[in-house]
Length: 607
Image 1 (cartoon, rainbow, N blue to C red):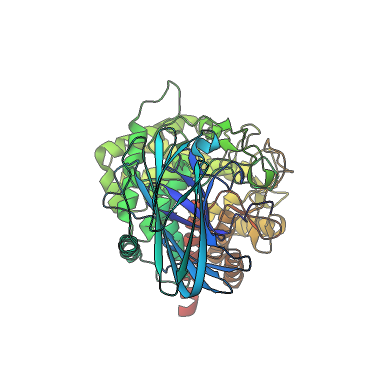
Image 2: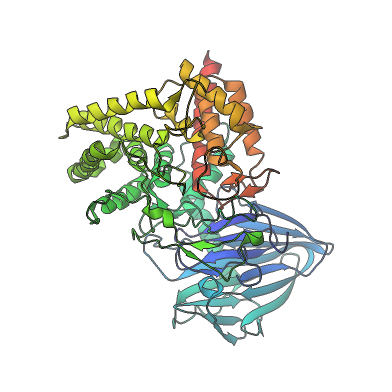
């Protein structure tokens, strides 16, 4: 593929502050440090010539590769089956003693071992700092190397000798059955002293500690349903995408990966969307992870307290992981893009959009747990009441909508739906905890939204709820309607909408968000089916009582997962994964679909 592996040909490792992608060829071709949203150090996935990579692979032409996670961990094993033997590379990032403390120092461990025969491994480490824009120098000393870039140094320590290759490093090591070797990549602030030499025993100790951390964490998961392995892998992925120092989740680990090969729909997803994060926290609460949910609640409370420009909305739709609202979008002209998918964008200009639905997702998550609502306290309630009072004056206007279209503001039905959720959950919260609130006003606005959606969002010719009031286009975001209690999942209007979506948006159980040709979104080209919506569709089918169809759709969707249980944003026309990878939105929807389908199947079994 022109030097690029398939997007899905990767596993994710991380330490709750940053993350790396490891391809099936043994290449780390995406890694940013010291944070998820920092400039890249390895970005061959966006430009295989200029981006930089760190590859360990056999010195053999005829190699079969198998890649797996160590069960219920974020330890990735890439196994190479060669004519002379079987070798493995174990990749992981130790979480450390204080994952909640921001640090410039991060440790990426690559353990090498041979389980059969003899294998010769080649190593290449070619960092390219600041998205490949900044040069670096190399200091080499036997088994250690220091790559010095702008503001950050990368130290490489190995149990075998390293050789200079210009300002990069090469090495070769031959191992026999039972032998181990190790390489540690360590990032630190510029000018810091390196970690010093390493030994195989140190690598093994890091491995045991990392495995123990993940085993203890996943043991807290409450899910015991039919899709245990997939749910466990999805919740570990969600955890890997949370920045521990602030509790803020990111939407995906990458930037610039295309929704259409060769197209322009290439965005930076390494930020915290209010929508995605709120839904993530609701799922984590369902699974028993109250600490993660409360950390995000505190982060969100700080955003509500932060000063905003005069006339601005209470919340921006997205932030950096430390709460910084400034996400200027730039085009990295020097990067070719994944398989010539250009432009490559860093930052995200959609941060300035108006998306009124975010207040609904926030309220939907906040009210899901009594403990979480109580933890917000009186001050937290005042902030919630404040944005609901603001929303009462401002909900009835066009916005850019959930899909962040760049074709102008419209009266999106989904935005109205989630405004209804915000008032409905706010009223419940105020009543349950006897909190001060303008309940007559909130109730009036809630009822006005419901009446408006039923009258203007319903298209009698299509016999379906539609994307926005001035169109007859369908939109899969409306699969949320029964999920949030706006409409019964078995009422005739909803079943008619579900049937219309099935005819127009569903193909082989996969679901498109909408038809961009029928509803222009300001961008050229098309996109694949949206995996988040495909799992929402499973949920909607299950709640509608269409259990055989729901289970078929679930099982069919899971055939598109990659070899280690990860999903990107979309599925392309030939079954390939497209978009940023892995995507939290998809994995949280997978968990929600599994829980809903389990519940409905259990009810059917009891009947």
